Amino acid sequence: MSDLFVKQSTPVAFFGRLGRHALRGLEQVGDATILGLSALSMLFVRPWQGKHFVLQLSALGVGSLVIIVITGAFTGMVLALQGYYTLAKFGSESLLGAGVGMSIIRELGPVLGAFMIIGRAGSSITAEIGIMRVTEQTDALEMMAINPMQRILLPRIIATTIAVPLLVSIFDVIGIGSGYIVGVELLGVNQGAYMAELIAKITMTDIYGGWVKAVVFGFMIGMICTYMGYRSEPTTEGVARATTQAVVVSSVGVLIVDYILTSFFL
Amino acid sequence: MIRGESLSKRYGDVTALSPTDIDIQTGKITAIMGGSGSGKTTLLRLLAGLEKPSGGHVWYGDEDLCAMPVKRLYELRESMGMLFQYSALLNSLNVYDNVAFPLHEHTELDESVISTMVSMKLEQVGLRGFEQLMPSELSGGMAKRVAFARAMAMDPRIVFFDEPTSGLDPISAGVISTLIQDTSRKNRMTSVVVTHDVTAGLAIADHVILLWQGSIIAEGSPDSIRESSDERVQQFLHGRPDGPIPFSRSTTSYIDDLTHKPGTVRFAS
Image (cartoon, each protein chain N blue to C red):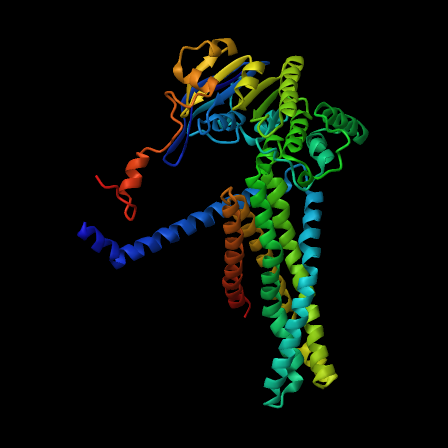
């Protein structure tokens, strides 16, 4: 008995637990990939899900517009404020436009935009699908010869993949615009210098890079949030847990993938 | 004919259904009865193809449901209906759209025809005029009646009913039982009804299967079940608290647990 206790307390046991968690995580990644690919394979299978895709795009995209505008505006304003006082120390206020623009287009737009969409739309996707599981609505669809993967998962994955880059573009424009208002109108940075530096320093690669990130984030959010909902334990607590996990995993995933993509673009 | 062959289901270490052979007769009403946790719903879901069995096969004629391609399974399901225990109405659709859902999905019928068909189905369950209500605005009984109308919308050949009368008032339960019986007889529909309701089950069924602890303990016509000499069957039919089927699922003695639990009061001996 005491031998067993000693064994349980050793680092071996710790690494054993760690290994089990890692294996479970890998198993989930594999399961999510299979489920996501199964849903995507329905893309070209009749009946087309055009109507459901448009409904989801409207719910996820238009529904997230207000939060994206607010977040973009305040991000640009804070960035201009912080950037101005930092640059002023070196007498480089004219670089404010380039600083705000590059920060937003390359990083803050895709990442903060993705975070907002995870909180606003991703969590609701997981909760909605989870509740459909709890209340047997997915089983009812199955029994009515409707494939839930095609009807429920696919439109949401496609909708997030398209909605996120569109919303991030809006975030970028609003962010840069509000940065301009704070920098030029409130803090007195020269308008010509602000715009000239903004145009000169930002390349198409920066813009494409931001869009690529947004598309990848959108796809990832769609896959993770639909997977978590579809595989949630069919209980109230199970749906709540799945919703929390979807937000956490998506957010951490966005940061990890952001680093990997950034290392490619730089 | 639907046939389950050595059908079994395990969830982890728990055996929900021991290997079971079952025949569902075409055009007849088969009632699957038994206590809570006896494996009725598991058996129904296996027969409907909503769960994969841990062992055995489900045969629809000479086709194995478990090995069937998804496309063929969905073709087959267009001629099936299912009434779920908690109705499973689609929350985002109103009553009309829920009932019309399978018709919109699988037919090319004109909306005016669909509208007439929906009205007919809702009239059958006494809910015509409630088309615009959302599922959240319905009582449990009304939701079940709408779900019944939806299950019947395509005039299916095979219908699975999971506790069709639970949660209904006696009048609604009677109407639903009569509807199951009438539609099954008139349309030569194959019905599989899972129910706790002994009276309704025996009244409408052509064939009764009684389950206990994941195994069939009796089957036959309602009369043969009523006359069964098996004590377990008689205990279940008459709802007797004492008999071979224990009410308590605990495996240890309550008094022993109570008196030997650390921190509990010990009685002086």
